[in-house]
Amino acid sequence: IPVENIRNFSIVAHVDHGKSTLADRLLEMTGAITKNSGTSQVLDKLQVERERGITVKAQTASLKYTLNSREYLLNLIDTPGHVDFSSEVSRSLAACQGVILLVDANQGVQAQTVANFYIAFGKDLVIIPVLNKIDLKNADPVAVSGQLRTLFGFSENDILKVSAKLGTGVEDVLKAIVNRLPPPPVNRDAPFRALLFDSWYDRYRGAVILVYVTDGTVQVGDEIVTMHSGKNYEIKSVGLLRPYEEPTYKLSAGQVGYLTCNMRSTKEACIGDTLHHRNQPVSVLPGFKSANPMVFAGVYPMDQSQHVTLRSAIEKLILNDSAVTVSTDSSPALGQGWRLGFLGLLHMEVFSQRLEQEYDAQAIITAPSVTYKARIFGEKNVKHYGGSEITITNPAYFPDPCIVTEFLEPMVMGTIITPDTYLGSVLSLCMERRGTQQSSTNIDNHLVMMKFLLPLNEIVVDFHDHLKSISSGYASFDYEECGFVPSKLVKLNILLNGIIVEELSMVVHASKASSAGRKICLKLKDIIPRQLVEIAIQAAVGGKIVARETLKAYRKDVTAKLYGGDVTRRKKLLDRQAEGKKKMKLVANIKLPREAFIDVLKR
Ligand code: GDP
Ligand code: MG
Image (cartoon, rainbow, N blue to C red; front, side, top):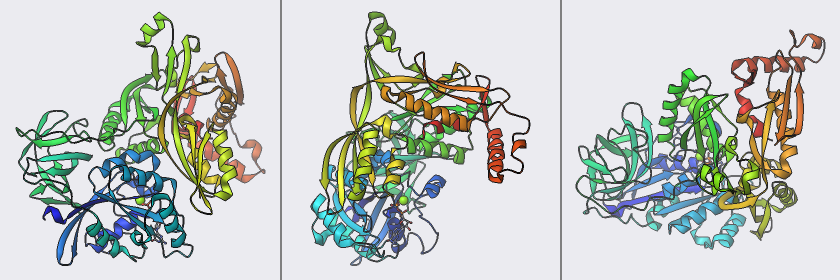
């Protein structure tokens, strides 16, 4: 297929606006899959994605489409829609010349619609605005078109209106892709050059890598070099994803496809790397802004005999999720493990779920923490830490406040779009989370867009859930990093029977130490099953106890007293005991369930 007949595009949308559904329709209409071949989205491969209804891994599909008796190759790159995964969105867009900006005609413009628009706009991509779900009774395409015109300056004629579910108008989307997007700006006569933009692990073939070929061609048997590592490989297979692997003889400039080359190690497939033929050097392609991990957590095997299994599971998953960073870590209670960096809490949850589902690995994941900084003084201290500004990714290594001039915490600029009915609740939530309002814009008569400067540690755990619940699901949120600012931070220690459990300690703003301490103690009291001894659960800052709960000792028959009483309560108690027995970790001579290490943070 000649380059002029290739179009590379992506669909971007706020979560649930119908990206996967539209992708399925496009696949069906171009014959890549047969109609009704499956119930749910074809591109959402992973079990986690099915369960959570979100797209985590960007997936690609090459579609063949004929318009005016010319055959086109349309390469669709599916992108994740959640804030945590914006680096994947950015990465996928490096291979595209245009995007479909999909907006639910019922919900209207949401925070990620705005974020996605600006990512695409910033990359000079052609943007095709598409209103989806026009079949819904409450759809208001006129109002939502108005929002798109006001916010982004689209003209009414450019806005397509479709029902991805029913297929209405989807043909126009295909036509717009062909007519509005330019072919990829590539050169087939130049030496081979390609951008490695995604990869996943295959047990038999090693790394399967996704490439966007910008120059020349590549075929089976070729010897290639990955520029970053300088390593040589022989190509074993190449092909298109339609969406399932379809081997081809070669890949040419402009195309997006997969290749395998016996890449064994997880570190070899470096996202953003440039590939070229051996002995035919090329200039390096602009890589992507690498994703900064925002949230760190320790990962440990349930017992040390599973250490090796867990390590290889983590390594394989990371090949498929390059946004995760890893370093080794150890803890007195949990033994040898790793400290992983994630883009956000959802990212972390998805990762641990995949660890269990795909690798059957049981792991303890400790309470997540964001990165803090501290400026320290005293020659000896500076020497000890190797610098006067230190970075703290693990609360266990929080420095003694008496050597610190100031602590700093990471901030984000949050965008919230909400119907004005919920303005009051949204404002008080943001205040409660130490946010300061930066701006407020009316998108139309009902919708307001606000910007807040917020500390990352206040939003990383459950901010999004709260925002959704106070606004009946209508408010939406997105954020970008916004640097570090000085802050009054303290380390909140959790003690069980007087012993500090480092794995449970966390860094909080001084003003929140008592309230956070009380909540955690209560939560732990709830999570930890009763045991042979009474357990004192305490929260402390320095030597000062800020909260305390007591968990009474276990009696032989915990439910004996409840006979004849409330049946549901008795059942709940038994259930909890049964659950408690499942997976326990002995810490400070106290049996702790796995959940104790992560659930404590959810307010
Ligand atoms: P994504 O998160 O953007 O990938 O959204 P999905 O494609 O998973 O769609 C979210 C929900 O909206 C699903 O329940 C879809 O069935 C539904 N949906 C998608 N497109 C339409 C449409 O055109 N009309 C209606 N009524 N529902 C739709
Ligand atoms: Mg989806």
